[in-house]
Amino acid sequence: MAKKAAKSKLKRAPRRHSKKRAAAKKKPARAKRPRARKRKPKRPPLIHPEGYYFDETAAENAVLFFEKFLVHVKGEWAGQPFKLTAWEREEIIRPGFGWKRPDGTRQYRMIYVEVPRKNGKSTLAAGVALYLLVADQEPGAEIYSAANDQSQASIVFDIAKRMARAKPALKKRLQVYRYAITAEHLGASYKVLSSKAQTKDGLNAHGVIFDELHKQPNRELWDVLTTAGGTRRQPMVFVITTAGFDKHSICREQHDYALKVRAGIINDPDYLPIICAADKDDDITDEKVWTKANPNLGITIKRDYLARQVARAAESPAYENTVKRLHFNIWTEQDVRWLSMQKWDACARAVREPELLGRPCYAGLDLGSVSDLTSLVLLFPDDDGPWPVLPFFWLPADSVTPRVRSASVPYDVWVRDKLIRTTPGSAMDYDRVRRDINGIADKFRVVELAIDRLFQGDQLSMQLMGDGFEVVSFGQGFYSMAAPTKRLEEFVLTKHLAHGGHPVLRWMASNVSVELDAAGNMKPSKKKSDEKIDGIVALIMALGRAMLEPAEAGSVYEERGVLTI
View 1 (tube, one colour):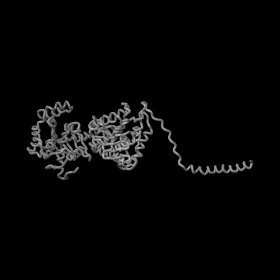
View 2 (tube, helix red, strand yellow):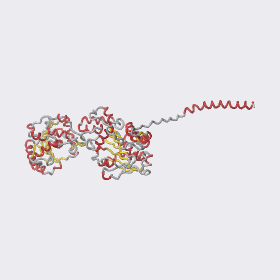
View 3 (cartoon, helix red, strand yellow):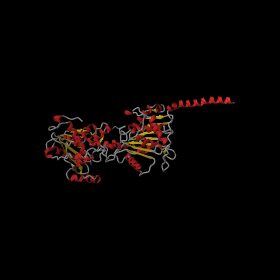
View 4 (cartoon, one colour):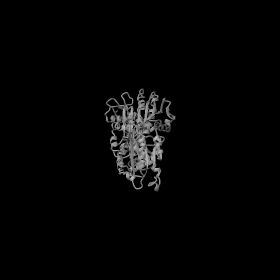
């Protein structure tokens, strides 16, 4: 027994020793292995007093959907994973998809995002649409893109189409068509809508992407689409827009409502308001204001681009409102208020008629309706200084008092001071206007008389041609109006105009709002302007002819030629 015990001890000792050595050899190997990540303890759920709670998993799933399944499809980021910027992640996606109702469905049914242009809201909206389509666990989801017209509605949709084709995980699950993306395995679809509200009553929307709400002419389409998800468990209307100018629009209504919800004045737990904007009195040349209004500054909107826009606004009063509205999200009173009254008043150099007698001039005639103002403006090209302006106005006598009452404009004072001529009765007496124009032409040499092309065949136009005037039709579109409108703005800014401070013409100058086309050309808009602008339109027509046709004598164009704008 003793021998057996001894043998067993001898055998066991080396085994114990070998275990230590083996353990010693294994330690370095174990040290090289990457350590398993410790799971972070789950955050305690955020609880709202009304029973709403924050679902961290749902919020992170929405964020991960963007990064894992979506890529950028435009500009310098094209082909790169869609990593949400801080404000997109923390202010929109996480709260929008993370906050839940007591029954587990999504809390927010309306997300209103009002931010300046170039801050990536269209791309973000495309990602939201695709999430609602394939990742929101909604049977037979119907997603729609809507706007003021089908072309605008297609902007977000087209981005989503390119995203759907860019990643294999989505490409094999989605079928992409011209105006629709479908997920047949889910019975879901994403479509572009036209702007006709009458055809949308049968929709059963799980998601609506409403683009540029400020362009909506009325609330019909809005009302139809925001009530189209009544049978869905957790419908979402995702609104993206920049600021507008129409105080009576559906967008302004939503803007004001969003501000009240954000301030706690209105308690609406369904509504998530996100508004990034400068204040009306902020200095847009201050770079702190740039950051305040543009959450993606330096990412999707470049500082040098914004600097150029601000510099251009400083040079052009017409463009200032555009920059404030589109790049600083400031609601303006008009679409684009054109002339600075300070600059206009600096051109109030005295105009003495006796010094202009016999001098060649160009005339613009803007004919109002039978009960409206008619305006004639003479413009005298001058090589040696500012170009003098002489305006003349007519109004039916019986319409003066009603106009004073309804518009609070001092027509009666202007008539008393002989700044406006009257014709008898309640309708414009064009025979009286014709006699007056001929009397004016007896004093000044009218080289050409520009008249709205719509009135080219009008009786007054034909009679004036019979009186010996060189009547020239003048279109009111961008083609005819853009160049002289720009030149008049330059004349005002450089004090190259002398209008004598005529009160009626000044009032009209203060009313002018201009329209901009896609190329940045501008022209006065009677539709968008607050009040009458006929005198300014007549002045622009006269300037348009003066730019093209040198006067018979004393014209600046005789020596240097026509400048092309």
